[in-house]
Image (cartoon, rainbow, N blue to C red):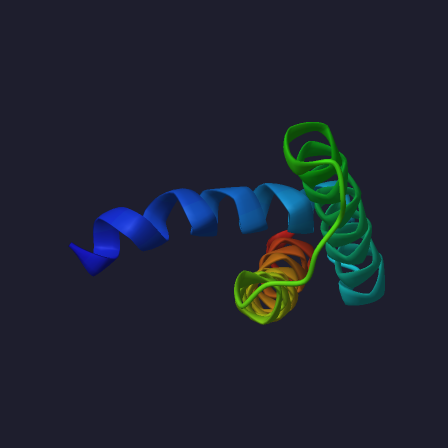
Amino acid sequence: MFQRILKPITIFAYALAVASKGNPVRATIAVMLYWAMFIFVEAGIEELIWGERFDHWLDPIFSICFIAFAAHAVWQCAIVQTIKKEEARNEP
């Protein structure tokens, strides 16, 4: 079951690593921007439904999830860089 959950996350992190050309700084900044937009949308929905923005116990959990995803994206960047080095080494 854990593999079913991790596979789409890994695919998304790998796509992010390829899009950032294996640069972990770019991948981390992209995840930070996703997190900022998530917070912005979450606050907007809370204001639309309840009329005010409020802090709740899920905020730290969401933050931890985005931090973990950023770490996974950096790991995928290392894989992309390793693949690039292997391809460069195998070229004639």
